Length: 371
Image (cartoon, rainbow, N blue to C red; front, top):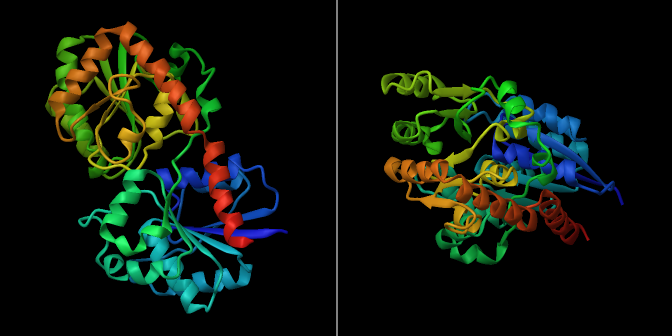
């Protein structure tokens, strides 16, 4: 039987949740699901990628936080499309999607995905108040890591049975058989020679790129040919560029715009570093491991569910540039250790974090609720 699944998300600009929706489309082997992806606001490159993968994108054009016309539009869209199941992402999708279903008297199953851990300072006040109420209308809540699930069940213990973990996954084949390192560096305008440390992520406070730049100043003092490449976009781009200039790294740090060929960016690197203050289960870290890179990451969120300390990667305390610098330098100076760590990390991703397995698990949830 043909079924319509509608994903609801705040926006379709570059981010982990947006990429996971694309992966669910690309990795699905089902022809009985029609996928509609509704952005409450707008979108960019991820919207194009989702359509290319076979999804249909609808932009509601929500204008501001209290724009209730978006609620009416969403309820009408769900009814008009005769959606069989709603899949809502993070707190904005959960709140607006569930309220739209209630407003429209729509009784289809609702699946939610929490991509980030619960944290009081970042969880909207309205969502804190409404979460138990909205959860009564939710059939299943998927968390992308055990740590994410625990963060919610600790806060809402009466809802514990509604939460399950389905780890994020990636298309592992996309990070194998990459072009040569020199070709990858040329593709992104990076130095042809020397050692390159890189990271991928939105330029927002939680990613804490400032610490990585501060750490790199120490790395550069010990590894003279080192270069730092930061791929992404966001409101802090100018601030990060200014910081690099102020501490004497203007020519040693590159800001790389997002690319549909991001896998080749990993192919340009010698080491990957992640300096986040908070994470769910970061796709960028999985991608770096799939590319065979040695990795250094802060011990936050679901990262300990990926990395076996000292075996498949290195973890350091958050907000500790000195620890970050020490581990990065160690890997750059011991190429044999770094290479062995990269290979073990690649094998971990192959075994445990494939997008195909993730997609099959999500679709099993759909099947269970639609049967």
